[in-house]
Amino acid sequence: MFLGFKAAKAHFGVSSCTLRRWANEAKVVSKRTAGNHRVFLAATSQAEEGRERLAYCRVSSSKQRDDLQRQKDFLAHQYPGHRIVTDVGSGINFKRPGLLSLLERVLQGRVSQVVVTSKDRLCRFAFELLQWICLRQGTQILVLDSGDKSPNEEKIRAFPTAQQRNILRRLVGGCRKLYNEAVSMIRDRRLPFASEAEFREAERERGLRLAERKRKARSGQEEESGRGEGAGAYKGTKHPWLDKVYVKNFLVPEKSAFVRANPYLKDVPKETRQQAVEDAIEACKAALSNVRAGNIEHFSLGFRKKKDPRWSLAVAFNAVSGSRFWPRKIKEFGQLRVAEPGHLRPHYDRELKVSKDELGRYWMLVLSAKGPARGTNEAAARVEALAESTRENQAGDRPVAAIDPGVRTRHSIYMTDGRVVDVGGGDIARVVRLCRHVDRCISALKKGEFCVSRKHVRREPGASTMRLFDHYRPAKKEQGAHVVPLDGRSREHIRAKMHRLRAKVQALKDEVDNQTVAYLVRECKAVLLPPFDTHRMATRLNHKTARAMMQWRHGAFKAKLLERAARMGVQVMVVPEAYTSKTCGACGWLHPSLGGAKTFQCRSCGVELDRDHNGARNIFLRAIRSWGVDSPE
Image (spheres, rainbow, N blue to C red):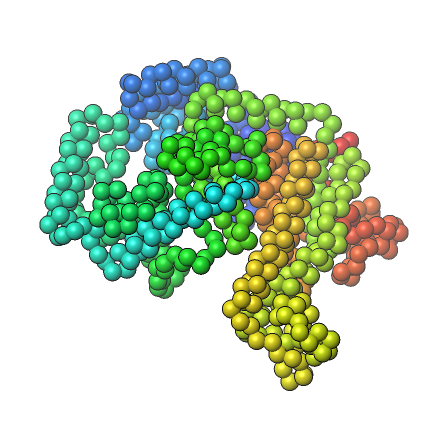
């Protein structure tokens, strides 16, 4: 049963601040009503006695008994007061004895908490339904391995030699040939077979294989009865040119007719050839999904071009050791020199990529999974490290930081130990200036010409196009300016300059983000951050101020801070900031016309201070009142 705020305080016997803190730390279950009022589930009090706590372990088959024992040892060590419930069976089988026993106890109201190492251990599907049932009975499900499993990409700058660049160029050319052939097959709807008879024979063999898999699944010889295409009768392939298996078997093998017609493709590793074909098919399927969702009306699948300076090359995880690529297939490639060799690993668990950007820079992209690893031992080590980091950060005398984001000054940070830090004061002027240079490049490329003052032409009569472009200012032809047309080489130079400027702006903003996040997680135990809805605020500002505000990327900073703080055990709370800049932090007087003034002057008590410093301090004071943040006193 859910209780209101006053009734919940009486039920739990705690103060308002403690109840809010319990809700923020997920110690009690709470939700918001339609009127934005918080209500609390009475059955989730930690002080409630007479209810048992369970830890659930599962493996798919009896061959994984060792992993089951590791799960039991890990949970018994981490949660010694919990009762261990085990199962051996499929994750989509809801008739498991252990699961049924657990659900029966939950429905009887005898369980207060269920701990699992990951969602898949409890069930492969319908986890949200089981979680809702448990919450209705006042049971909390604690998932240890709840991190995002999407790949996390780490970019490492690479510096290939001339020989390595030539090898990469040949490999990229082979992948481009395979990609374009797959695109041509999709656009023309050609069968990935030499004849119609071969396609019918392949379909017959696939149907037999799937029927055999379905028969084995029914007899319990497979771990997962619903894995792959085994569930249900085979209905045939409607679009074979979008089938990865058929297209790869037609284009990738060295004995295929396509590779025999293009023998240079044999120099490309097989995994790299397969990824090129998969990229074409996935691009088409993604576009079709967008059409069905109504995001786009139509699309045209294009070919890769040799003139495009950007490319990406997939490398199998077992073909790399450290930075040594293809030691067997391409021995002459050798070891790739990188900027951060300390981030390399002797063995990788996911594929890697080597890419080149529009500025001619080479990158080594390492993919790794976010959150704790699937292995129980490694997950235990990471959970223990995170717990130790959290204990160290929350203990001691580390301050709480309140952040007031802005435009002129990126962040004004008030700390409860008395420090006030300004981040990026006045730096937006440089960012805006570089963005204007980018605008000039875009304008010249779009028009195919640019205008300069005639005095510059008279001053340097033999100046090159790029020399004149340095003096380019937006001007109208009727004002008497000299018009300089652009040829192909000048376009390439201006486009390269535009890419360099964009990369510089991106690097400056990334530097501010990374330094600020590192400082906060190193110095503070908790961070108070306003939502700062820039899209809503931009509608009320003039276009120059709105663009400057958007350039600071406050949303990206918030995402970085949340991710890094979660790994370091630092608490981040998103708190409201209404009236924090207009209110005096000493007496509470509300300024009627603060506007864009840099200084806050109180007409009641005479306090005068920087408006951003006043806003950051008031954000902390408001959080104390509304959210129960601990005061330094």
